[in-house]
Image (cartoon, rainbow, N blue to C red; front, side, top):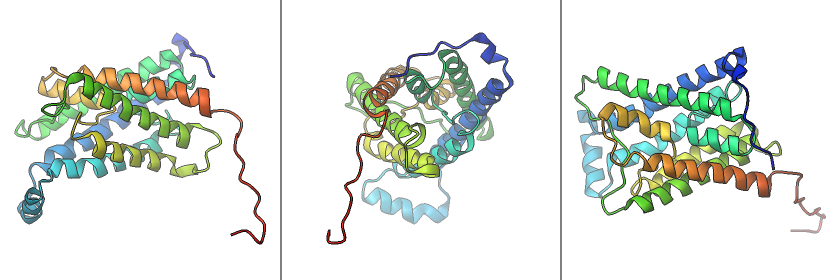
Amino acid sequence: MAKLALGHHREATDPGGLRAVVAELLLTFLFVFSGVGSAMAAGNLPTSFLLLVFLLISIKIDIVVLASPPAHALLVAVMVSAGLHVSGGHINPAVTLGLAAGGHITLFRSALYAAAQLLGSSLACLLLVALTGGEEAVPVHAPAPGVGAARAVAMEAVLTFSLLFAVYATVVDRRRAVGALGPLLVGLVVGANILAGGPYSGASMNPARSFGPALAAGEWADHWIYWVGPLIGGPLAGLVYEGLFMGPPGHEPLPRNDGDF
């Protein structure tokens, strides 16, 4: 198992390190701007969508719940692909800490990444408020009615564990067989997790994704949930994958004969 690496303050002035930090800021800004923006726009559809909305309401499907999974799945896939060879395309402090737990990034650079991610998310949400004239409420993550804090934390931890497990299996592990499909598969896991956990905890899986909207809306009541849950699930997934799955191949397919079926 890889050990935690503390890093050095020189990483803050290294050109490659600076480029990676700026990339995380920009990628997180774009991710949150489009993700939060799509959620805001879903509640203000044009007239041409009224029939669709009526049909969705008639079968009790929330239009925001319907729009959020594919929007975030596509955004994650694109942003991870865009930043993979610059910063790793983390766009998420839980991903950063999960990779640090496996020894794939230093703790010092992790702190720089997290600061950049939080700044990018904040700028995105503040810009959305400015561009919409404050007429559209910024959606803030919060547990659904009847879902207690402990259950919401557990849900976020499990969903983030799933996300980081997918990151390790499809992007980090050198033995992966998926190649360039890794970011797309990670995005699909995000979409599936939003479908699974969205109606309960909101399925943030990303402290930065929750921080920007909370800052712009000034709503902090349940914000801590979206730090505690992901920051438990992310590092735990890193430790589990590094400890149990990373290493030389342990399984080889059995040889096939012409008579096999």
